[in-house]
Length: 423
Image (cartoon, rainbow, N blue to C red; front, side, top):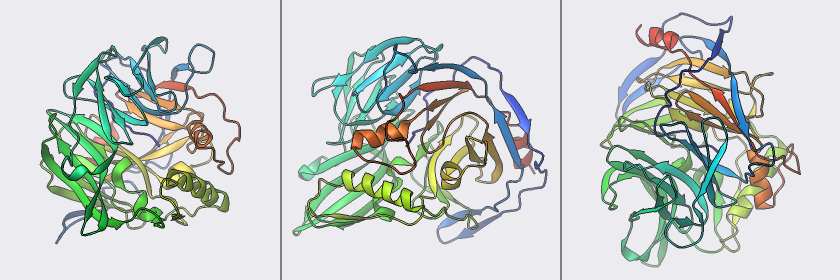
């Protein structure tokens, strides 16, 4: 539900209290690196080499829990070099801007078809030129605007030939290019196909690198959707400043593909011993309602929901090159008295540490966004999303609380991670 990559780290050094859990270990990494026909596989054990750490984060400010700012459904959060926070509201179709102290500054963008306007906005990113790219999910479009709200450049969507219908899912700016995921529907010999992709493009739409490209048969009307295929990589990938891109390509396996900047596969990170989280009856019914509404555009269709939660919920590269992964276990079944936990991998893909976040919140309800030396929690995001769909998710409040944004200082020490990775 959250996308985690900000464009630049903040500059302030803020207090973070770090408490090492008693179970921290100093053993060497016990996994295996194996070359096979598909390239390098990094096979990780279930025990992290550097053990576990619990972070007690200092709250800096919160916004939206009073009458000053009203949030709908926050789909993305970005920060700039001055610490200003940009919040894309997918319900109100606008971007709220708050300062480094949480005070409201401005509202930019708005719903519409004109320059700097958008509909069905689901994501945004910093482009290499310093503009904000707003991803309009359907019909697929990228709307560029400057941080002051002035309309920006035009971005040409890929798959320009053949009049294909397109959707856009997520975007991320890297030096000199934009990484984009989406889908296009094409016809060939009276058969319809859905082409899904994760690629890097220049500002003119020229393809620069290809990470994932898949084509499946589909049809308009009387189609059976399967969650294992429908809920794919398009919203779960992440990108690093050095050009690397990572994505899980399977629904129910702890397996992450990592590509180099040129699109070549670097390695596959695996946890074969990870146990998937079985859904409760209420959770299954909640997802059934979500997907039934999302796919209602296809008349006579049905949706088959999986019995387990999607193994990997979200990922983020940090500025030091480490990869932080939120699994289904730590989103849906977090440890008691903790908000959630992240699995941390070094640049080689080795599972080095499990980081627990000891803050208030509910990992199912709330969204998490990393941004340099701060961490942001958007409260009641799931309830707000379900309310927007007109659906009910078992176990959540039927009447959602007002959405708020809580900012925490976040500057975890990497000493333990560095020590472990050098063994």
